[in-house]
Length: 636
Image 1: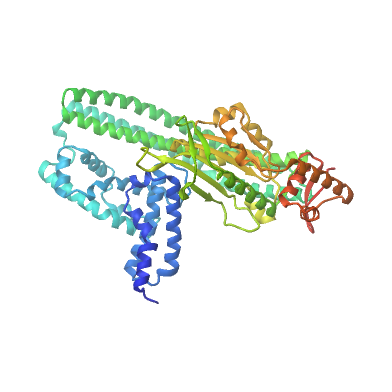
Image 2 (image 1 turned 60 degrees about the vertical axis):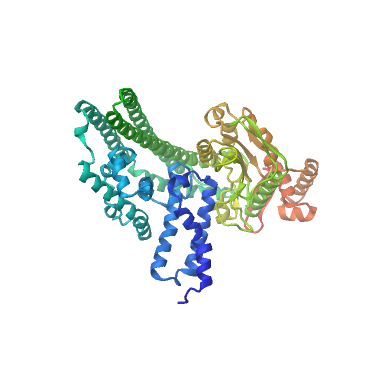
């Protein structure tokens, strides 16, 4: 074991642990107000530093400092995830923690006020029935006072338990001391005698109604959960069927026979019917939740009237009690709203799974009926991704750029990009031969209060390359057009984020295998404009090989961005190559893209455009051969 030198301690304090301490010095509200893109950047920095900590420092630190530092890394990431969760963001960092861990953080972060108050101040503010009184009564009603009992859960990692006790233990001790002092001077925390009985009875009635609503919904959820218990098994069977479908697709692409599809179709229909049943159950639960929200809304109106009446009569104690109950009603309403949103998301997930099964088998059936299958080798998919993202980035640096924001109803002019305005992400590690589903985002932001405050996004312009990475990795080629389920999966989470953030999201989705006809039909339909195009999102899809672009004609906002997404080709040059390729195919019976590029001296991307133009015109077909790989041959 080597020991830490003075320089090592300097590196550890100033570089490795510093971003962690910055997060830990913030409360949840500060982290919630952080831009979600910035929050991901901080997360990535902490993950990078954690890897460095484990590789370079963990075995060289004293045990107490090592344990404390390890817990700090875990808790800083939990705080960032809790901030994203509290905002209702669709962020992958939320999935790294359990709902219990997220809920505990969100609850205990309410008590930051006790960090700056003395025990005497806590007692006095409770006596005046100010905000602390409500916070403390809720604390004891919720049985959160025993932190050790709450953390006595084997599913919560030890480093998080350590961090919870370190961050909240002292705070809750001070809270308890304040409550003890209050009880010594004024009696029990909830003093019924100070309130007229009829007022108290009305509040108790509201409390009982809240409990009835909450208990009724819990029973309804438990009943639905028991019915949905087999969903995991259906998902497992669905994954198995999807694997079998991949085998059928691979066989078609290599010239094989699909075999008997009747059993596969029957199994697909059974699984789809199961998903539909689950969707109906969740829909019923959503409707039940909506009904409970309506009941609470009625109660809320009554309480608001009572509060206004007591305020006018200057009956402060009654007013305060009604306000307390009103806050509880509002809290339950928020909880139900989150529950409803979670249910809608679950139903959407089921719809996408159902659509994925239908879409995959539908493409196989269409291929057997004569619809051409486009086969794209992984190196060509990589080339398309590089060209698409590179051209987009180049276009996004042709200043000045003028962007109309319908949110603010004004034109924003960009003359440069700050470093934190550009974000690159991918679904897989970078590879020289395989795409990684790279995306490139440019964020147009302004300060919240014009000249001060955090910067908030106004417009996000994003180019996304979409590939079937599993197929490309396993087989070396892909022959599936991007389907409706994949399209909706890509846009739905971006729609939600844009609506929550209140900004316009311009989105270009590119696929080298092209897009299923249903995607194009859906995108260009009136129903899509009604259901998906909002004030906050505008989308187009791009065939990154042929250069075709599709968007909804009713959405005029995307028109100014088409040129930034559309691949650029010399059409006259392409026509000449297309004729030359057709002549060679007639002469030799097939053509290999790499050989044709060498013979003509043309860039591979230009050659691919010419060859896939012939495939789109159904003059040639693509096939993967064992010895040569991807070839183009005359259409039978």
